[in-house]
Length: 334
Image (tube, rainbow, N blue to C red; front, side, top):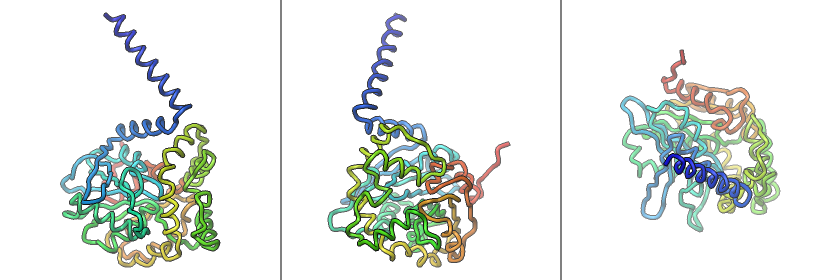
């Protein structure tokens, strides 16, 4: 009997290893996909869907609303997804109710219909629709946004302040006094005619493993050389969404879009914190000085050392400490 169990278990293990090796070489995107699913499960993310008449939102949730603790709604950046907050889900205390939503056209949320006008305001309205569907507007919550998500949640708060109790802006996308390499790329696209822009012109829409490695390098301070097959899997997973990402990039690259957060900042009156990676190569850290002068209720600024644009990947522990401190919930480990 035991010999049979050991033999069967060994056979299953060999089959799993063989299958993983085959996927690695033949279809790496499936290996990347299943690894992400496993990591999401381990983080406590419960993937769910909610819809209205014609749109489906995919989101991840952990826990339930707790008395005397604000629910956190987290919004990701351009070409990202709710999985951007995997480490966030892992490291935040288990008694914090967490929700992370996929923006339209990202992750597993529906894509915009043909002819819809894209832009930050479009994203703001969809965050509002999601909030209402989830009934989060019944009690003010803590809103967190990174990069494009930071700009989106900032503008959302300016427009719907009654639903937001506090706001965390993480490296929000904006026009900064000092240019980064990425914002220089945007300016070149505008000068050359935004409609002529192709995927190869935007480093956040990689089409090859080398371009994917470059994307990770400019987003992270702690740079790592990733295996080419894994990078190919990442590229293949994102490929179906690339036409939408390019369309959205063109819509966002207008000068008006890049200054919207600055224009609306004085209307953001809820308690606000700013978090920025000191070595951000996407949105220059000089944006901090602009926002701290404009935000009427900026209560905390955290500049994270040895950190790039993607703080949720680069220094998730420091980000969690920053946000818990802002919420008045940080407890030093003894």
